[in-house]
Amino acid sequence: MISPWRLWADRLTLLRALLGAPLLLLLASGQPAWAWMLLLIGALSDLADGWMARKAGGGSSWGARLDPLADKLLVSAPLIWLAVDQRLPLWAVWLLLARELLISGWRSGSQGGAPASWLGKWKTTFQFLSLFLMLWPAGWTSVRITQVMHALGWWLFWPGLVLALWSAVAYLRPRSAPDRH
Image (cartoon, rainbow, N blue to C red; front, top):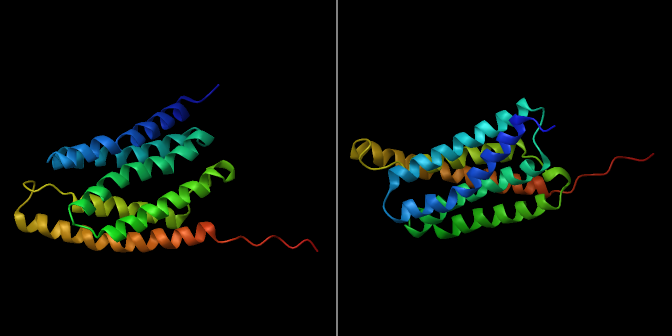
């Protein structure tokens, strides 16, 4: 029998995968507060589904493959919007999205979905923090604090990009075969 924790972990992962399109639509229609809250729900669902999978003694192979893809779909929507809005350079967003597609393709051919490395987890943390700050809605705080938050988010994007590229190299680097002497 499948653990209810595992079922709920998979459901939350699927929900997160579906949040990218509404998030992008909210940003494009000038609803930054709702978009920010949807991003928060997505980030919290990422934490919750991981906790639930651990509680179940491990996630499903389906969940292990969908979880990183769900993160990518959720993060890609606001990144695309920030590039279109010229708040991030298009080349940097393109480079990050190309990395995500490359690693997703590599993972799909790996046994068990290839779990995230510590570099990949830090990359995701920096991406979420960066997006939360860059998307902080005007009107929630003073103009000056909002500007500082947006600037801090912009600066956090760059170490996230470096971690993304570093983790891609680490994922794709050939592993040496053990000696057979």
